[in-house]
Image (cartoon, rainbow, N blue to C red):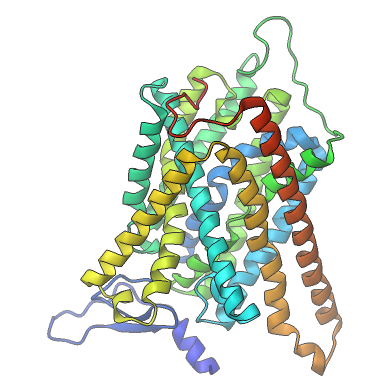
Length: 467
């Protein structure tokens, strides 16, 4: 593909121009993924760079921030911050490679297309299945998060299974919005709400006498520690939680594919990762400092019953938006792959709507069933995050750089080339280690949890918010 054709396929799209008369020809734009984009169908290239910031931040910060205080409790405050910064640095590079690879290969829509280029048909199918499984389990976790919020606000006013079903219906409705460009306003609402919630929590834990899970009588001081000596299992499980907090990387393929100008991707990425990392450090440090080992899980319940209602009331729209995005990504992937190359992909035809709504409802239904029926779903999400989240955030990006630049070394092995080969290899190796170790830690955690609690019942009515 010539450089000129690549530039045309990735050129900024004017989403506002409309023909003044119906008799005039319809304005159209050719895209390497979506084909001909016209006013007769959805505009799949309508996300500005600020909208990209919102989508990235909401994908990253949605569920991960609530686990950061527990990570610091497992590792100790200073090692926890160091590990967080290390994971943030590696994942930021991985995210950057996503944008660079998209500019070099405009026909890439998802990580399955990367698998096709790197490993052929087998790579495409494996990465595609991994992508769908990962986001469906994350969406199921999002539904449970909404049900916890509804239980907390209503003091367990209804059966939890009902709240999970309501979460599925709400998620399906919003996830069925056709384009990310139309979802960006929801992402901004979600970011404002979740940030308001976690900063309210941060202030509340500093003002309260003691955390809600601490002993009610006798003197109490926070037992936070700057350094700890965790077991191998505890350490790798904590690292897996940090990776999960930054594991929005596979969704960034979908986001950059719908940008008006993909060359603004790096700008949006830097803002996103900087803000997310600052929020993680500030919230995690303050909550852990005041709560110590008595931090609640999720952390929004650490400031007592009254503030729990306030925090979940503020966070609920953010949790809904998170679930919306987590359902939208796998549904859009299946939709694009099903209709790619067909005129129905970018035209509002009956086939287009039938396939699209079928994809969103199917994904939402499977996420609901998995979240409701699996007895150890919380452990399953940790396992999926450690195994699949790491697999899609580290190794492919190292391979992507090598795929694009390995041939340069045959011409001239510069110092920069050798350093980048070494770095790419390091990302692949450390990603593989963290994937295996995190998976082991998650399996041990599932086993121990099942021994103690026996798992949860399928479609249970029990209160999951500890109200």
